[in-house]
Image (cartoon, rainbow, N blue to C red; front, side, top):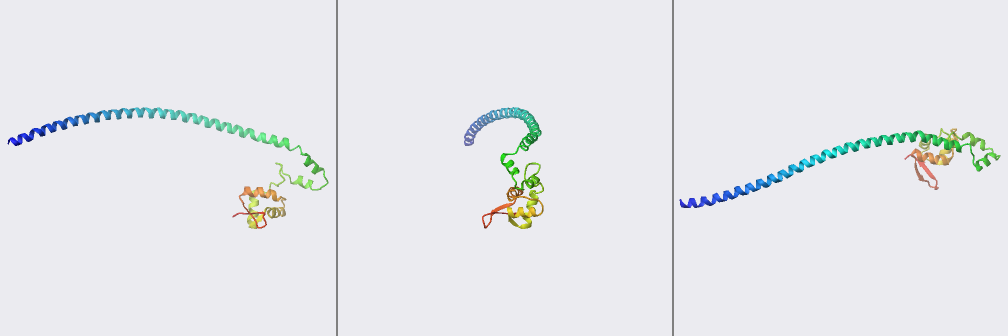
Length: 187
């Protein structure tokens, strides 16, 4: 039995050491938990401050967008008058070249003046990108001169140069033809 007593005494000491270790571990855990809780509280305060700053910035952004839209609207109201003023002032004045053409006895100046539209272009208003697309669709693929001839025979005299610009805006596909001229198609 003495043997049993001897073995039980060291076991108690071992338990005492384990209890002390457990107390230290618990104390370490509690101190770390307290520091984490303090950090969470600090983060919550920072989050509340950041949300307040965000709401203030959103309000400022809303005001800036409103000011921008008002400025855009005022520019839109003023800009057409500026354009009209520029065209109106340029329309009555003819260049010396245009005056020389109209003064010549070419006979074509009357037709040119009749074709001129209100915005100063020689292309009739009836020649739209939709019309050019329709003619390209009818012909399959054609050069600007062929498209212009087709539209001109329909009663709206137009040049191949005008067709080049209108076809580009109409979304026609341009590629060089066999003879080097640009051929327009829809696909």
